[in-house]
Length: 253
Ligand code: ADP
Ligand code: MG
Image 1 (cartoon, rainbow, N blue to C red):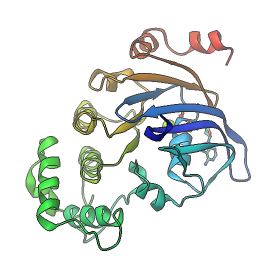
Image 2 (cartoon, rainbow, N blue to C red):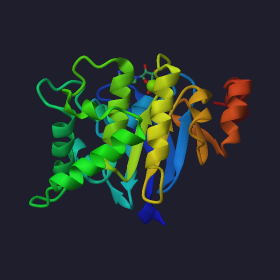
Image 3 (cartoon, rainbow, N blue to C red):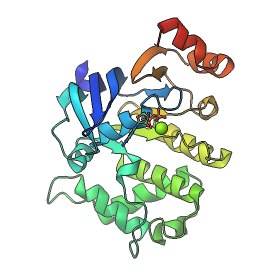
Image 4 (cartoon, helix red, strand yellow):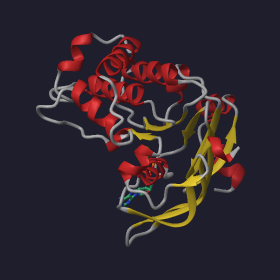
């Protein structure tokens, strides 16, 4: 069972030389499922995502993070990617002079064992399928990565990377309230296209509206550096209607 999940186990973490932010997070995303992580501002959602990515500004004091049963705590960020994790913000925002196609081919090969590079035809077919799944024009792949991209195009490119790289688990932090409906739909389109037996995702979102487009298998609520409640998709709707206060009161958080 633990062979097929992303597991965050009793995770306590602080800012390096600073205060504790996570106070015992327990959260499991089985392969094949899409979970939503919600919660008020400042509850530690983005911090959790950054710690899973291996951000050196945080320190894990207790607990573990396991991918398919193996701890990734001692791994460098790029090794975590090779272990099958996709964390959008790990990737460069802009790479002058490198096209999307070339960047993705390099990124894909970096995740494979040496000498086992992806074939050119195989790569372009993969890329074309992903571009089509996002209703994007094929010419996009020759543009330089994120150079002059609008916010919505960057978002789409991030999701294109997800589809081409085919990670086992993805954590997407979509808290940005500035995302317009089109960008939300893009995220949803990509995640829904990636959905399948071999893929698990944790979708961090402040608003329920993203979940109009992606129906999560499970919803977790974070407050005060802990997951205080987990439940079926209806929990997100209840939160949207009632806000967070009742749940904080209910658990004394
Ligand atoms: P969320 O994403 O749920 O809104 P965050 O994880 O961004 O919450 O932040 C949780 C808390 O930790 C906040 O109080 C935030 O100010 C603090 N925090 C997170 N990262 C840092 C940091 N690098 N330096 C100082 N405070 C931080
Ligand atoms: Mg956040």
